[in-house]
Image (cartoon, rainbow, N blue to C red):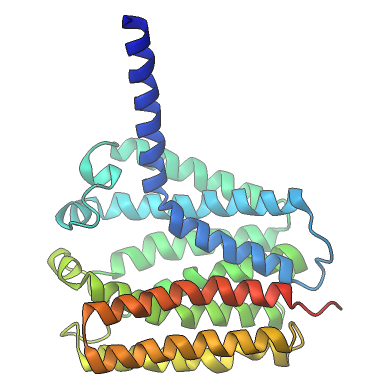
Length: 300
């Protein structure tokens, strides 16, 4: 009986530790980031067949590098995370994981992920290292200084597309930059919607994320509309560049117009519920558009 209790306790500790690491790397966010890298890799013209080994290496390397960046983010922001309801339960902020343990994980995963990505070429590994550095050491501290942090953060947020493209095509040709542009402009309405929803929490922690200094204002909503509109011409470039066909063009237009509509509703209603609809429309947009481009890929 006592032995069984010890086994159950050990199993619970292991499960709790795994859950803490899942929170440390922000698994859902990391998965979305790596998903865009894998799709970009598969969209590269030189990738003509699905190489499962290469996909798994890209996925693993991407998850490790992204996880490292997110771990550093939580180390730096542990005190402010503890002040906010939505982040207080994070492992470092709550004290369940020491700074030393999180730092060791960040170093090992960052180096390990970069070396894994070197399997493709030096360019892929270098882009991953640059992305990690900008996110962890420029964007993270800038969040408390200026709303321009969202612009800075959008760069490492979009670099996974270039990382995937470089892994597949061994270059930074126009197709990779088009995918970078789609993910770059997509981030503004997406993150401003999140910042709108969590405005009180963010303000309490001293984060400046909405474009208006006053926070939830018409100006912030207008900026979300502008960037959702800027996404429109960038989103159709894969068709005109010959990367994908007419079917994906229609899907891209519908997904983009739906997001623009939700941003317009935010401007009219000025509510958290409207911001939540913008956030959900952005969550729908990215996977739908990327998968549509892949399924409708023009073979060269």
